Image 1 (spheres, rainbow, N blue to C red):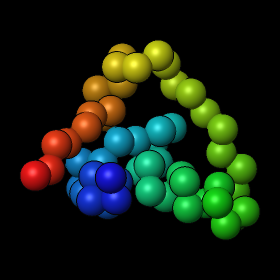
Image 2 (cartoon, helix red, strand yellow; image 1 turned 90 degrees about the vertical axis):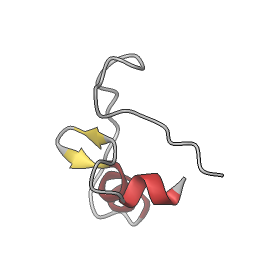
Image 3 (tube, rainbow, N blue to C red; image 1 turned 30 degrees about the vertical axis):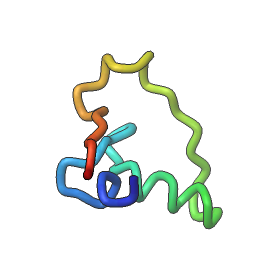
Image 4 (cartoon, one colour; image 1 turned 90 degrees about the horizontal axis):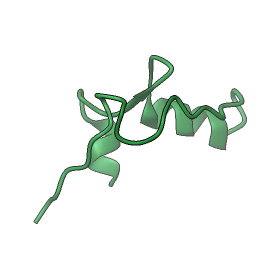
Amino acid sequence: MQETWLRDDSPVLDKKPIAKAIGDWYYDRAPFGKIDCPYPCDSTCHNRIFE
């Protein structure tokens, strides 16, 4: 969910917030293809349920 990606506590990959990593990849600003570990070993990885 976009709101999760843009929060201060958003998931992080290689010290980069997920929204920045995806934006850089999508707009060809930087290649990004990293899997840090199998889910859920990264403590920043989470999902929020919004009603």
